[in-house]
Length: 233
Image (cartoon, rainbow, N blue to C red):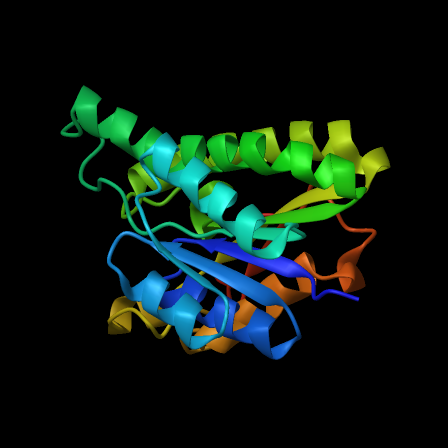
């Protein structure tokens, strides 16, 4: 039996890179894409597919999927993990940067989903996991475009997951708080009930669970992995 295959979009560093490593450890063939070239190096290091391309370019996403199908012949899981889009005071963000934020946090997921869903339908199963943010349900002025468009992603995830649940195609979002791959500041740490930043592996463990069949009855959800940072219920 062939190995299951997971693609990591935005896997050059941080949560994406460690998720690729964790999934490879769990027996997946992995394809890793990033714009920096680090994803290509990591995918090759893990014995899978490495690819250099931008999440902002639909042609690059399609080329990545095509390359994965040519190499592996199937796609069982997708992890959408992008970096940070435009920040700043909401009154100072230009139209252009709001649109850029939408491409970073929402449209890249929709485009990737449109590419892999027909493949997953033919296979009879699939899992898509999106790295979102704690600021979805408690908007934070530090991350304005992320909070706005990932709130939209939560709605898209629910619509998609409802449509395809009976076909065993799932979509879930992981909502990280502050992670040790980022510079630590005392004011941010003071906000976290756990008293510390997350280790990156604590996020990738959750990602791998959601990609795998161990979470086969979970879909349309927003899983907070934030050390208690958010307080909404």
